[in-house]
Length: 374
Image (cartoon, rainbow, N blue to C red; front, side):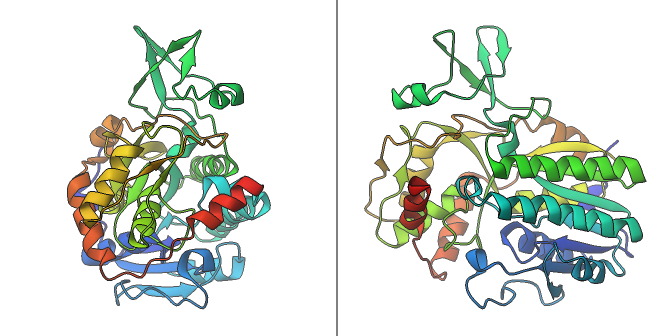
C-alpha cells in the first residue's frame, strides 16, 4: 500500500496536532493549513521550551485554532478532539540527559499523557492516528563485523573511561551501517523508553480498536523556530545558541560520533504523508539517510554563521550516549512516498537567516553542570 500524493487529506478532514506550538508541531500545523486542511493544536506552552508566560508563537498560521491545555488533562483533550478526524500526537517532554533525573515528569508527560489521549479516543473515533517516536529507542545503531550484521551491547563504563570511543566486539571495532526499523530497540534513557512506550501504546490501541495508526521514528530534526533557550533541545540548536553568544560548541568524546540530521520541513512532510498513507500499523524512520559527525556539524554551524570560533572537543562522555546511529529510510521511501528534499547545507543557510532575528540564550553550561551534579 502507498500514500496519496503529498499526504493529501480529504476536504472534510480536521487535524489535531498535540504539542502543536512546538518546533515540529508548529511547522506541521502550518504545512497542513497551506495544504488546505483545517488544523487545531493543543499545547501547554511549557516554560522550558517557550519561556515564562509565553503565548502561542507568532509564526503559527492565523488559520490554526490554538487551545492552551495539557495532554494529561482529560477535559482539555476531550475539548480538543471535538470535530477532529485525524490526530498527530507530538506532545512530549524531550531531553535524554534530563530524563535521567526528572524521571517522574518524563514518564508522566509522555506515558500518561499518551494514555489520557488514547482513553479519550475511545469515545471519539478518528480516521487516523500518527504518533511521534524517536531514533533514541534504538540505542546503538546497526553495525557490521566483516560480513556479519551486529546489534551490539551498549559501551561499558570501563571502555568509556579508557577513551575507547568506538563500538567493539571481541576486541574488534565495528563498522556502522544504516539502521532499519527491524533493528531491536534498546532504550538507554528514560526519554527513549517513554518514546518507545508512546509508539507501542498507540500501535496497540490502533490494532485493538481498528484505528489506522502510524508511528514515525524521528532522527535529529533541525531548522528555524527550534527553541534556543532549551538546553535539552537538538544539538544543532545548542551549538547555534553557544556560537551566537560568543561561546564555542562543546563536543563530547572525540566528535567523530555520527548522527542523522533531517530538516524539520522533511519531518513535516513525513507527518503529512503518514496522515493519509494506506500503510498503517507500521513504524517508519524519518531522517535524511546521510550520516554526519558531530565535529562536522559544529564546524558547519560556525561557518554558516560566519564566526571565528573553534569547536572544543572535551573528551568527556555521558553514560548511555550512543556512538553512531543514522537512518535507513528505504521503507519510508517505498511505503510512505517520503523523500528528503532539504540538504544539510540549504537547511543551515535557512537556520542562519532565522537566527539573525531570533533571540538566543545559552543555557547549556547550566544544564551540563546539573547533569554532572546528578
